[in-house]
Amino acid sequence: MSLLVHAAMSRAKASPAPDRLRILFALALLAPAFLLSGCVYLRLLKLKKQLNDVPANFRVSTAEGVDVRLVNPILKPGDIRWLGIHPASSAIAGDTETWQARWVKEAPPGSGETVVYDLEVAMRFDDGKLVRVSIPERYFAYISKDLFLNLLRSTGEAQVNKAAREAEVENTAEKPGEAPPPPPGLELVRQMLGQPTSEAVDTAGNTTCHYRYTPQTGESGAKPIESTFVFDAATKLLLRLSIKLPTGKIHFNFPQPPAGNQNDADAAPARK
Image (tube, rainbow, N blue to C red; front, side, top):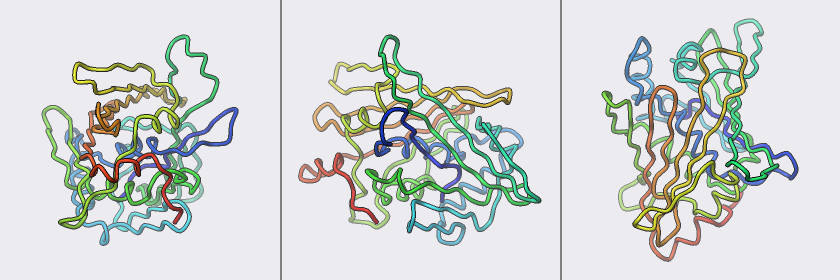
């Protein structure tokens, strides 16, 4: 179910604020199926199929954060680099290799923003294959683990446009007749991610917030990652999250919850 993420936010001058959208951002790293080209095609295709049967292929613990173990590992370190993810640091002990990757948000010009917002990804490889991803509990202070896990499951049903290197993921309910976890709202995104690199309001009144993250790594070939959030004009809830990786794009679409549940999107979820 998960593939790559220890999605996270570090703050320089304050205690870490809850990270609701950084987790969603990280989900793009869990869905390489939209990058179906090149020498890693078959492994990525197998991974997408595994996401269609989470219980058989992944072991997920939410007792402390989210800990994901891949039962049938597929991806290699070279595949991860091909996806555009390069470690800021790594260590090898016997047949085990661990990575820490980091991206720092680009603040808007003249913002004076002093808080440091970043993304971190932790990965472990055994015998040359990705076997584990762990996300600390502190990053789920205000984001529902149900939403995170539901989007992982939905990723296995992504509609892929191979020619355009794009994929569409719908935040659908796991069971028919149920509603999926609600999306976060605009104000919470601003609170958690800081000021967007750029922001605009379209003719329909929808607000678009664009964030750009620069990788910190000594390896060549690393490129920025960009995320774009579109919020509904009326509800101010997230409609669409688009992630641009060096090798393609993935879009997460969120149906608007019933009117009575809209306020829940900006409320802290119960701790599990």
